[in-house]
Image 1 (tube, helix red, strand yellow):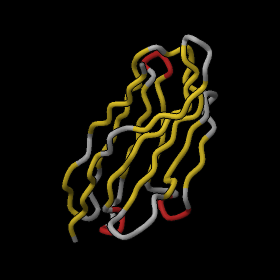
Image 2 (cartoon, helix red, strand yellow):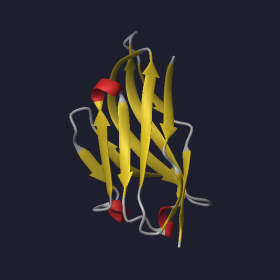
Image 3 (cartoon, helix red, strand yellow):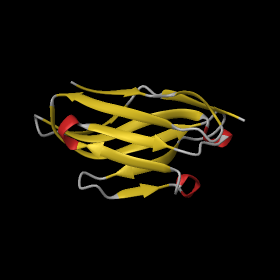
Length: 120
């Protein structure tokens, strides 16, 4: 079994910062791509940032220059450093991971979601 556990959400004022973490655990052979998605009320879930196993990153235009995704492969953990937060960043943030398990089956996994609320 594989689990993704997120932490780090909360309430912050506009202009503030938060750091999200997502740790993968269980029967893991290797963690491939890891991404952060978000879903605001009444909107579709969108990809915020992604990072490959070799460290290549990509971001949605609205967060470029403000958010930084990183990972610690030894800990199977991905981070999202969010600076200069805006009210429009308010959403539930979900971690996603593409994982090859110890039985060599490759599956997609999602975290439980963590609420980020930015007040104006």
